[in-house]
Image 1 (cartoon, helix red, strand yellow):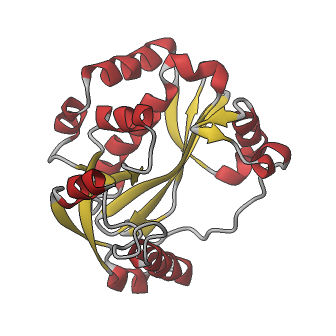
Image 2 (spheres, one colour):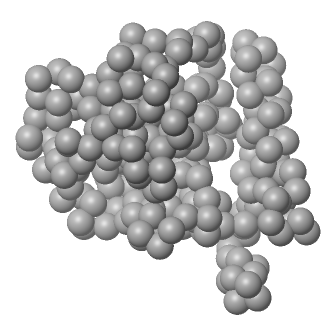
Length: 235
């Protein structure tokens, strides 16, 4: 435990501005989203009560100046997986989550065990529609993305919280039958590229936390340059 704490305390410290003031230009949904996220991140850690919940080991990628530079920060093996998906005819696109509920459920049920057992409620209950409003600004949003097979079937989906300088992957699932085709690397890389054109304020691309993940997941995150940071959250 002491070694883990020393490792966490030695991490680079950065500030991430969620730009709450910019949400005043948007629907109240996004004002509440930013406030709630900031509260969650700065609340007391459940295990280490003397630090904040999301202050140590946040898995972030500092986005370079261009898409090409971003692509080259990713490990070669992940780039090869991405190119494999492209060659096989898989495609990436933003999606309307509510229009793909059956496909989402099929993806979730395709693997009852991922990084642990999938919750029964996700496996046994069809996903329900959300009522998120459309964002009026690129500073705050909650988009959904999909990867489609050559036949047009949704085989992976993801959601992403956009809050000022942060773009945080909140959910990402791929259909078990297609994982070997590189659909999850395609999803992550394409979201990263999407940020440059659609969410230019998002200079930090995130994927949860680092130290709470098993070693194979840590290794996976490092492939995409998601590295552990100490974060000061600015509302």
